[in-house]
Image (cartoon, rainbow, N blue to C red; front, side, top):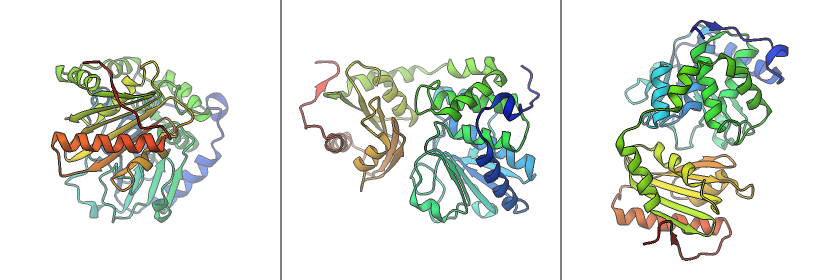
Length: 359
């Protein structure tokens, strides 16, 4: 497919979801934003495809509807192999938030994240005007001028696609590919945290996406060190009944914790996985579950209460704990604390751990 504009089909022809909510909300915030000067869109730290694609779509919408200059910013790094290829192949126009003159922006937007969650690098004492997200709403969002938070949606990119269609804004193949891959990866091909709007968006975007680029993204080349993480995760895994906990200790890619958690959740007999690793004076946590009895987002917020920040969905969640003590013994002690808290939160008896690979 060429890189020309992909003209959105009409609602009745290809997208069987009522767009009234998205049309009304997008019209109102666009009119409010019009003429207010430079716009900053903040993605969450170490952004994933959903955060990047949502930011790209919002930037495209603003440029088409108001012509205002827009900057997309994020903290951390683009770490995961698939995300790096996406960033390069789809020419994602995003910059590190460090070094930006935040006073030069009149409007601040957040996508796939919210103020005060701890997973974005925008200063907590600065105002945020627009929040678009699919995670449970935080109380601090009541201070924002505009919020569209749909915790029932599987991907934030689905919300942004609705805006584009509701406003009849055309978009090119690269943006269509970004949005499609965001929904594909966030919902694991419609197998996780998905509802009708996500399915409709996935099917709508599929014929518009560039299959060559999608193949490149989903089959990235990775460095030799990447495979060391698998060995480390397996070696340091401890099993408590149907719960598995692993510790990667020092890591150079914060995304690797979630990737290893997804990998280890595939084990027979395991329903809940908690992974952790230390990256730049911060403990990165990832929680995964396959049981409907566990709400991952609520569980991890309880587990890290008083220690750090966390949040997430029904089956996937993450957190961060800042610590100046980075010794291996300190990290092991934190692992013990978090494991005990998790077992208590899940209502499980504390039991002796079994190694994944016996000595």
